[in-house]
Length: 212
Image (cartoon, rainbow, N blue to C red; front, side, top):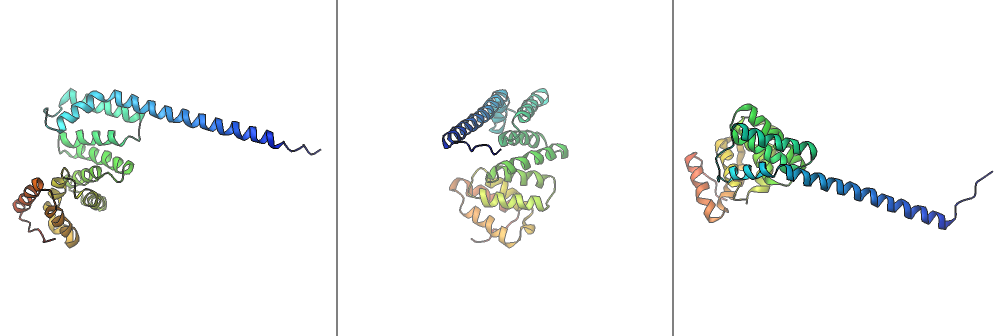
């Protein structure tokens, strides 16, 4: 026997309840991610404060147990919220800034690489990835991709221009005419307070900047 088709009213109620259930599930998932992010932020508050003080020169570099504590706090938070690009940035910074040893710089590269994947339009991650690979002497395809992103996205960022220029002037002949022209334009259009230091960097490196 063929079962009778459900009435339109019953179908409407089923659809309504299904929609409400979907909203509840989505809301619960969103709330869970918010709670995880808040927990991650709370657990790294001390570490992030210390790192920011270090980064801005308001306190000496972290060493020994202080450095390890900051790293462990960040890694624990990253295990909870693995998609947090800011945590990758902080971990990369403390490895890169502690020393230029191969092991530390390789760790920095790993975290900067993850940060660029999570925030592909953020110029700071690309610039620092290129800089870390430059310090390692790894001028490979990944380096050039990172450098081109850094130059394209960060050419007008005063905080990034010295790093972009440092790399350029160190490997000037490898840049090629197009990148050299882009660096010349970056320096020429830099803000008044930034232009002269960039020009001085070029002069010390023996680089003749092209006219934009």
